[in-house]
Image 1 (cartoon, rainbow, N blue to C red):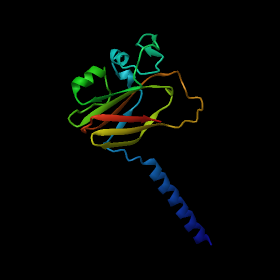
Image 2: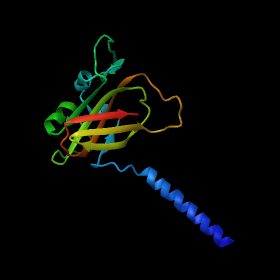
Image 3: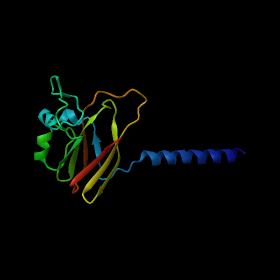
Length: 171
């Protein structure tokens, strides 16, 4: 009886470990890494020139500026950074080093109301030079996590690929 119980217990533990391993491995390809809240590394003028729809205010480094609702802005902006010249247009600094011979950066700017939440790459695929990415908000125990709508910048560092279009879904 004890042997049978130990065997059932061992099988149960192995199933739990197997399921945990399967659900924790996202298998993100192209060595993609997400950097969230990248606004702090970017030039203020670049951020101001790349506002998105619904951003009610903008922090210029010193004070909050109100954004007129009469201005027509896109829902999001995407920049593909493939060289140091483009990099210097966008960033004041970027703590991780970038090797543009082997890597590129995808910059995604959007208005977001979950500024206190973190995001992760849920999926990433490349087909016919179109990169498709799904970013998923990490679940938190805090129920009231919403904030005022503000500009949020995500940066994805990944292996260099021939990319002509980027589609990002934020969930």
